[in-house]
Length: 339
Image (cartoon, rainbow, N blue to C red; front, side, top):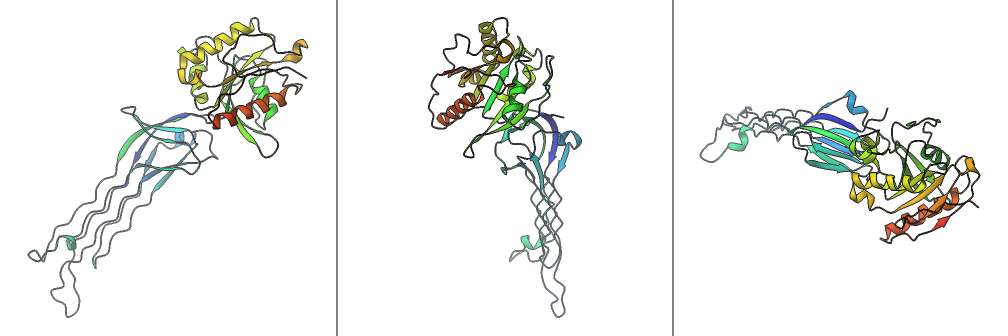
């Protein structure tokens, strides 16, 4: 099950209280104060984990509390600090304050750690309050409570290439052919109900990640269909690929509609480099990329994922575009048809 939103409560552990104690030893009747301080409360730490792909675990456990610090003891012994609690999340997770909506943190890399709820400080024992004029203090401090927050977790998948298209445009088929991903494939609309990620492996150990999201229909940016629910998963992609089936009624209208929905959802997303990919060419026996007005696209490609034709030029173009983006160079326009 793909879960990309969750609301949880986090609480840093309470610090241990300080101790009131006086030294009592043989032949030392006036030993003085020796109460130790309490231990620090455990913190709640968020850690990126690339082995995770959803927030499913947080639907089963929605309360995360750091360990309580132990109280101080005599002989100036400090209490043990409470254990930290680590919350593993997939890279791409945003953490918001559920009350204010403020973004508190963002986990982008595997192994990245962020303290989201600090544990409370331990209280001081009576030895801390001893002075030359106050030699037998009985004061002590209670431990401080940890930070308490109600968090909203939101997952935005991180991928290099995002596949965008209407239902049954061939996105899942293409992903299953170029990667080891196994999305559901069928001949009816909205087969894909959750985003899928696939790793494409080229020669010389070159790899990149492709994301397939549910089909985009007219009005997706307003919440129609499944588009609004999953469009955020291509916000972090570097390039977009607009998939148009060769048997579409109007290629230009379908391309313009997809571009419009993306632009209405996010201007930043619409500004990302993109290409046009004509799919299902095996249905009509075509062997060319149809003419279409897409001046901002860096390429037009014609493929048949089922027949595995035209894939090599497409993957090479994606890789070249990704390399140029790493050097802040806009990809050049190119048109490639079936060989």
